[in-house]
Every structure is written in C-alpha cells, then in structure tokens.
Length: 142
Image (cartoon, rainbow, N blue to C red; front, side, top):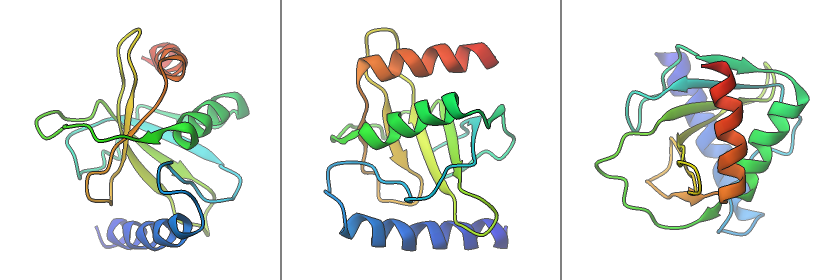
C-alpha cells in the first residue's frame, strides 16, 4: 500500500509540473518512451485495480493508447454515479513514475472519457474514431 501511495504522489508531482508547460485542455503524459500499458476492469473511481486484464507491450497498441490519451480534450462530464469501465496504468520504466487513468469506454459511435486517478475529477473526452479503435483492441483481449 505504501508503494502505491508513493507512486501516486510522484504521479501527482509530475502531472503538476507537466501541466504547467502544456495547454490546460489536453491530457499529458511524460515525455518518455512508454514501456507498457496495463489495463484492468475498474472497481470504482479513486481505486486502481492492479489485477490486470492485459499488459500491452507492442508498439502498435501502446501508440493507440498514447494517441487516445494525448488527444483527449478537457470536457466536463458528470460521472458521479458511473464507475469507470477500465483502469489504465501507463508505465515508462522502473525508475519513472506511472500514470493511473480511469476509462469510460464509449459504445459504437460515442466518445470515451478519461480521468486521471489522482486529480479532482476533471474529465477528458476522446473522439468517436479513437473509441472505435480502443473498443476493437480491448475486445481482442477479452
């Protein structure tokens, strides 16, 4: 538990630093090579499920998640009564912090919603095209 709290603390620090150098309306990730994307079925907002459904390590899948996250635009969504569908952990390597992100995966023709686990509920919305690509990738692993 202490390890998870330490990781979340460092994620928060890096987010604060990263957000100062970038526009406020987009999601940010570290300017480091992503080593792995872990995805799990979400339990609830504020809780990261570490029982991973799948770990993506191939460049094509990592690039899809990276594009989906970096292209998501800040847009207020009322998700107080809706639990996320998935939890995503973006890993950059052993010596770097990780990003913990909740994902509400949209249905066909809908947008998806991302939210950093450590922030105060700000939501970011992806395009319908990105949602379709994410749905196809996630359905392959189920």
